[in-house]
Length: 339
Length: 192
Image (cartoon, rainbow over all chains, first blue to last red):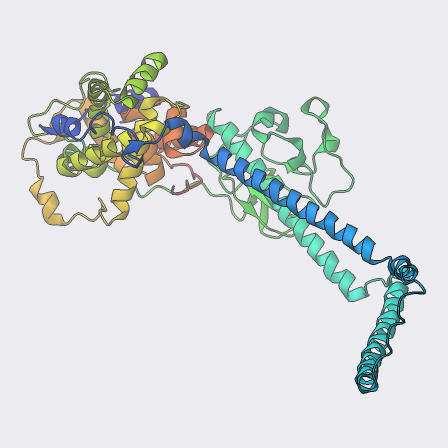
């Protein structure tokens, strides 16, 4: 039995439809919520929330938050302005002192001197203040030295040593290899998608699968500095692709055949879509009649799921598709298969 | 059809029992058939159908109409079935005694017409497909959903559905062929 695909599709579309159990329809109707509670069921104080609130509460919430933030900011700005005015007033002691002195006329009594017993306390207070100020001066001097050192560093930046440069170079190469493999994976996938619509045959050239490739950027290996990305498929040429397309119009029956190869990194994409990381000129590649393979060329192995038609699965199939023993022949059309 | 569905949805949202009944009548048989083929028995299929529609009513307000009602309902049924399957209701773990109880004593498929042989073999082969491909076959062929609707239900791209359909046809053709041809190596599809 080797049916064509359209017969298979037709048979699948006319699969028998299981009959619902008796009473199911009534059960479904019975579980329909009563009128008024058929909505989401959310209520507030026994009344349903309006639908517009359910839809717009995120926007309203964000708007309220923004408004509150603006109000708080305005209040803080006002307080800051008030404090600045107070600072300006307080930072004019001489003018106030002169005004205060001028306010003291000759008829005003002379302020009495500080008594002797407070002089000792004042002296102690002044000595403590001197100690604190001395400490602060020392801290300021240390900060000044540090500031000078940092300014010198900024003026003469040091270059990284050779070991650091080597590590950076390795990381860059690794990133380029990963990006290259990603490109090759996308090319393999594009070729397979194209083959799906074209009798399982790979495209004859790269330009045939531009729809599947989407962008020409993936055709340039990140390590290739001699080629540029095509601005569009209309301007695409040999100078805009780094990778070798080695299996044009190849059949998918040769899964280990090399479809794409990166001449810089040596990685290959096989006809089955997998990507293998190899070194350039890897001995794992074999050339047979001008075709490149990974290892020996093989065809796909037989599937273990091949079943003989009608091999004792009838009762199970009937049970799965809800067919009772007296049901119709599954080969006949039993009516429309769509709801 | 879209306008008719929109009117039905609005009536359901307003709480009209007749509209909800009409919606049940339109879709419950298809949903039941889908779940029946997946679960393998009447009781579980009926239970899952009820769970599906129990989720439909509260979610009706959130249905934005970006897809057809049919594919939206199938999407809910699909998730209900996946939840049921995860809670240890694995269809594959049937004991031998269960299959013995389902034995059919009538003449086997060899005595039937070639079309019946093909149908039997195909439906059995569908059960052996990869789960993601099998679900695609159920929705696209058995339930009659378009490629875009099937993609909506499964939450994948249309190109992925197309690829799975292609894989399914290749596998099914190889399974039912008299002389098994070497099947092509396919990229395994990711399990949703």
